[in-house]
Every structure is written in structure tokens, then in C-alpha cells.
Length: 220
Ligand code: C5P
Image 1 (cartoon, rainbow, N blue to C red):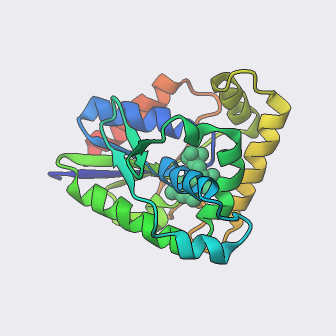
Image 2 (image 1 turned 60 degrees about the horizontal axis):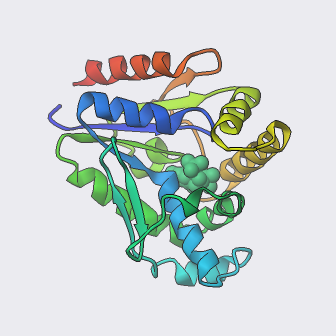
């Protein structure tokens, strides 16, 4: 294929971002973190006084923020109405509210359109990571990967990333977010029937990267 589209889905803390960025960098592809887009729209809702417990209020604001993603795997960026959002979208407040915002169908329609446009414009192809990329956003992707890991492994990785985070609380928050993401009506977190499932619990990041790079090369 001239341009290769790779979809990488899975719950939080499975290594999706680290894997996707490294694979894209190694193969000269673009990279899109779709979770960052949902976090960005959530951050905008919080800043603009939209009640995230009110789906109708979220729906009517869904088109308002301008969300722009930079797709260089060596330095991905995200801006909201021109402001750098990379730092503020990683707070616990955004993490705890993003599932409610991303469950609103108007939000998903809006963000899905952005994602498809970015993927179509990527010159050599793209690695897109998220929850519903293989099932809904890019069902014709050349390769679909579904990453999993035990809740313990996922929480331990996240605790390592966040300064001062508590393991038990992190695990509880991840389980809660995955349950919300998996049970929503509109394009829930799910493995596509034709996705390759990779359990990363006992693998190093380098092993996961090598595994995915090999699978992409088979498609090129
Ligand atoms: O990947 P990350 O953990 O940053 O994603 C944050 C949240 O964004 C997820 O918990 C989920 O609610 C939402 N999301 C989504 N669909 C995607 C990517 C992320 O609903 N494709």
C-alpha cells in the first residue's frame, strides 16, 4: 500500500501512546492521539462553564472550540482556540470528566470528522490511537491492533508517569473510566473483529513496538 493506516485501540494504560508514537516515528508515518482531542474538548467545556453532567449542554457546545492536532510523532501538539492545551489536558480533573463528555453523540460526530480528515491528509499514512478507531473511525484501516494489559500493570505504568500518584487510587480511576468508555451507547471502547489483540502485561515497551512494526511491515 502507498499510504498505510494503522488503528491502535485499547483501554487506558496499555501503552497505546508510547507504542503508537514510536511505531509512527520508526516508519515515517504521522501520529494522532485521539484521546487528546477528547481531553481538549473536555478542557474547553470546563473553562467555558459547561456543566459536564448535562449532555444537552455539551451537545449544543460541541461545535464551538477549534481543536487542532499536530501529527509529528516526534512532537505531537494540540491547541484549543489557538492556545497550547498539551499540559492542561492531562490534569486529574480532565481525566475524571472526559468520559462523560466523550459519550455525547454530537461530540463524537464532530471529533470523528476531524480524525478522518487528518488521516486522509497524512502523506505517508498514519498511526491513530484511541478507543473506537478500528470499529468506527477508520473501519477500513490496513492494520488494527487492540492492546490490553492487566489492571495492575496499567495502574503501575500510570502511577510511574504521574508524580505523586497513589497506585490504588490510580487503579480505581482507570477501572472506572474504562467501564464508562466500554458501556456508552455511541462507539464504545471495543476490539474490532479483525483487530490483532496484543496483551502487553508481560512485555516491555520495546517488545510491543517491535511486534507492531513487524505487523505494519507485513502490510506495506
Ligand atoms: O487515551 P486517553 O486516555 O487520553 O483518552 C481519554 C478519554 O477520551 C478516554 O477515557 C475516552 O473517554 C475518550 N476517548 C474516546 N474515544 C477515543 C479516544 C479517547 O472516547 N477514540
